[in-house]
Image (cartoon, rainbow, N blue to C red; front, side, top):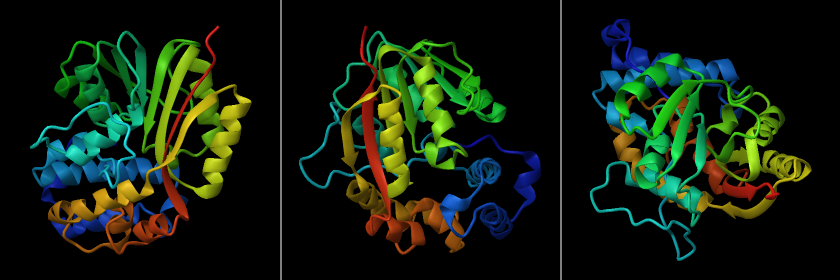
Amino acid sequence: MDYPSDPSVHAESSSNSADALSAHLADDLMSTSAGEWHTFYDLLSRRLETAGLAPVSFFLNYGYVPTDSNNESSFTIRDGTFNADSVRLVFEVIGSLDLNGRTIVDIGCGRGGTAALVADNFKAHVTGVDMSSEAIAFCRKTHLNPSAHFMVGDALNIPLDDASCDVIINLESSHSYSNLTRFLDEVRRISRPGAWFLHSDLLGVEDWDHVRMRLKALGFITECDRDITANVLAARDQASDSWDRVFGDGSPRVANFLALPGSSMYEQLRARTWEYRIVRSHVPAV
């Protein structure tokens, strides 16, 4: 989730920009409030713009690197693909599902990388929803596939009609929400009979237990509940050098946000205090 540059930010030095970024993250990343997350992502995107690396911000997910044969993507990532690990994560979340002919929404779409990727690879109607009007303006300007549309909206009050979606995607976003229960209730509300909910994120073990129980209570049937923490950590190992080019300040809070090797978040993922999972579930068809 990131947004276009603000001219006033260009005057900031790299260190000042990094300090501003860090100021909006709690030492314990998961204690960062929803408002602080919003401000942080806003500043982060401006930092990326200032650094001349705006294309990186199409995808800010942690990425996925295969570590064994237990992979689910039906797509081959071509050599030279930009942000290949992040693209691979999106395809792993989709797995073998055929999304052709579906009405799809990507909640927390940020700069629209996931929504655009889905629109480019499936014949489907895709809507990206994000709470930032700046992010949505960027998506509308940048992602020109006529099958992809973008709108401003809150994940806790999704601006879509009841039973209007065949597929709901939520990738590395829900950890910043103030109320997971409310979000899951909204996912159920907009789900048509037979709809799929494709959810992937890093959450605490107890939070994942809550997600499972709430999905069951809402009538979802879980077909995949897969721990991909090792794959994500492998991607973080590969990504550290490129992110150092963006920040280069050694900020422990920013390193924690990026889950760079040696950071608290990286170590908590490695210890499985936090887990990065793919949960793929659906409501019964009538």
